[in-house]
Amino acid sequence: MKNFQNKIIVITGAASGMGAAYADEFAKLGARLALCDVNQEDLRSVSQRVADVIGPDNVYSEVVDVSDRHEVFSFADKVRSNLGNAHVIINNAGIAESSAPIYEMSIEQIEKVTRVNYFGVVYGTKAFLPQLVENNEGAVVNISSIFGLVAPPNTADYSATKFAVRGFTEALSVEFMQSPITIHCVHPGGIATNIAKNTDSEEFEKLFLTTPPHDIAKHVIKNIKKGKVKIVYGNQASKVWA
Image (cartoon, rainbow, N blue to C red):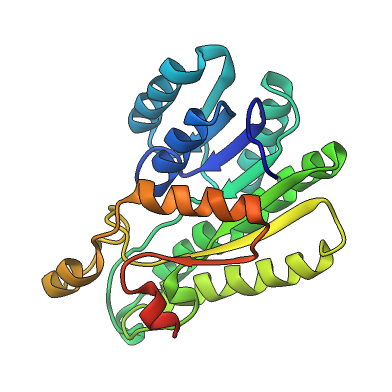
């Protein structure tokens, strides 16, 4: 896609961090926005902020738990009813529970991270992809991580989900290779967001977490326009990937 004016952009995990940055940047481009998150208060704040830019009639928001497929599919139906068929789905919602070796992680923790980070992406893709197909244009943007390219110690639960997102998205990109719908897997690194700051290492934060979310959002949008499948960006990300 080259132009997002009046296009309907769906963003999960839109209440803070990268999700809020995507909302801000797409609003500047005149897009119409469908936003969801589990955090009602912050979601309301972001929705109001972008509504001030594009008008309240061009924003639809709802509290959604992406780990619940029924909520995700219901959200997709409501987006269609309130705004129309989506043109872009950004499966951004994600969590990082804690930094610990695998033998200290509970099964419940691993299952929770997997439901949100991986199945949330699967549900979002499955719920909105038919709308893109009906439009005969669009983009699926699935957010992995630099930890979907390399897996540091004490991130087994998180990294596994991000590798899963990568595999899911790369397979999808081949399936849609001859389609007007583009598929993108984003591997951000070094972003100064709440999820990235969930670490025990102060030195790690000082070294890596220096890239503003809006910088990454702009870079992702630029590469959606180019149709680039694998998008790697952020402080130290290229060094890790290399």
